[in-house]
Length: 113
Length: 113
Image (cartoon, rainbow over all chains, first blue to last red; front, side):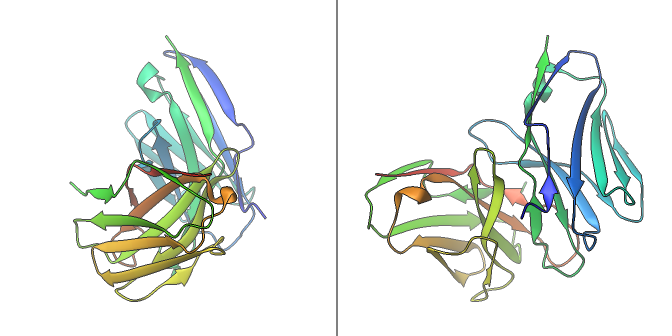
C-alpha cells in the first residue's frame, strides 16, 4: 500500500524553465512533508519541507506547495539548472512518529542545457 | 556538518551468509534508520531506533534485524542473506522528536549471489 505516490517516474525540462514535481498521499494523519534530492552513488539530501499549517514554503529557487484537501503537494524549481538533474523523493510523516517518514517512489529530473 | 558513514560502498555475499552493515553518525543524533532503495519502489524503511538498545520495525523488517549498542552506531543484520535482499541500503540519522530532516549516508550496494 503506497501511502506516498509520485506518479511521474521521470521528467525532462529545458534549462531556465520551471520544473514541477508532483506528489500525492493517502494518509490523512500526515502533517509534515519533505522533499529530498538524490544524486547517483550518494545518499539523499534534504531539500525543503512544509508543515500542514502552511500551504507554501519557499527557499531560493525551490518552492513547495501543499493542498491538504486534495492530499497533494508539488515542488517547483525556477529556474531549472543542469545541476538540478537528480532523483527527487517526496516524503511524509505524522506528529509523534519518532520522525518515521514514508517516502515516495521518486521522480528522475533531467534538466537539458 | 553532520556525517553519516557506512562501512562499505559495495558488498557481494552468497546466499545463506550472515551479513552485517554498519552505520555511524557523528552528531549525537537520537534517531537512526535503515532503508532499502529499489527501482520503482523508492525508499522503504526496514528498522529504526530512537535510543540506544531501542528498535522499532519499519515497513519491511522481515529477514532483517538490527542492533544499537551505542548511540552513534546502528547495525543492520541479514541473518541468512537471500537474492531478494540484493539492494541499495541507506542509513540515516535525525535529531530528537521534532520535525528535523534526516541525514543519509552514501549507501551500500549489496549483491547476494
